[in-house]
Length: 445
Image (tube, rainbow, N blue to C red; front, side, top):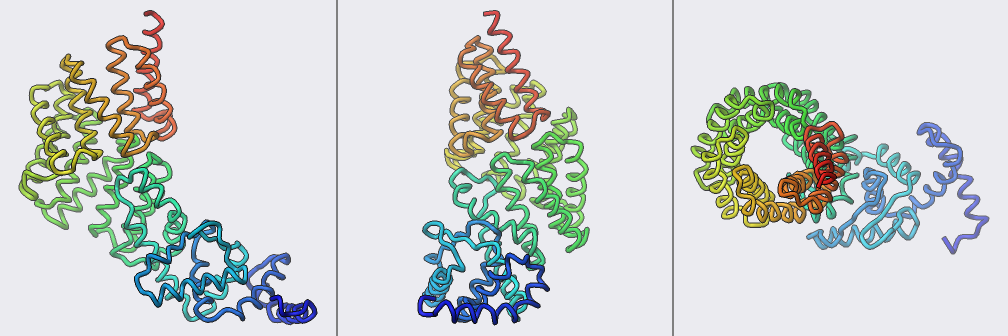
């Protein structure tokens, strides 16, 4: 305030100190924060109602960089109001600009804005508005985010987290599961399963508490949590959740529903992973027939079912039955999803494994290489699925005694698995055994 003398400013601050003493005491502000509270009051009085409301809304953000994309607001009047509010807050140093479109609130200023909000009649409306805004951003998180998605969404994650942690009561019942599963997908898509797990556990707990045990969203949340357990090799924890989800879906939706087909496929995967191949085959076949009836032959879910059943046949060395299914799944995925899709990488990898298992190593190698490059492009260099691709190609090189090519791939794959899955995960242990055997064999040749 350049036009105000220091003497006048001091008088105003002293007056504010007297006025603010009950407020700061009631809100447990530290003595060192009193001066900030008094200065804040003088600045608050200079803000118009629009800037005051905007500052209060920002106080609901996490203590992190705040991305504000004003240009994306379609309503010109609203855009101008937001621009003016930001300019006013910046002018009074109540908001900091870190770079273009990125802002930050000082922790004490954030607390003081929050106190103003909580005392106002707009508190409930502001919290609902903020929760809705963050939910809309969360909806942009795909189940398999690519590196570009992760880069674009990362600045928003702390604020989505803030809503999930402190403001989930302002999210409607129909969107509750979305908020938590989308957060989990953001981490799962990077192979960060430990960071994803709490969100899926909270999702199950909250949906059960808010919606009741007999609700379809409870079945969905159970399935997502079970899927994470399966990805981290915790089959005994995944199985009862999947059985519960399957039974619930059958009760609520009937036998002929796509969610029932999904549950059958996931449960079959658990049976397969734990060596119960006969039970797994029966469920895979049921799921495949159900998908065909419900969505027709030309559908990505049908391709996935074909791939799953073929993989089981490979495990049980029924290669002649597996090969046509894998080829059909690959063609279907390329046609429906395009060449640049992670499911195409999975199909390439599975077909390469079949060729390797049947002694056609020259046909297997280029498919393994394509699968690895595609996985890297779509998932980044540090995803467990990329590590599995590396391990498979390295195993082929090891078999052919091309140890110089095999060793660095095994080494990279092991580091990724240990970092993302943990040292005791079945996949990590398999890669470690393969790497150790490769080193031992290489020493003798």
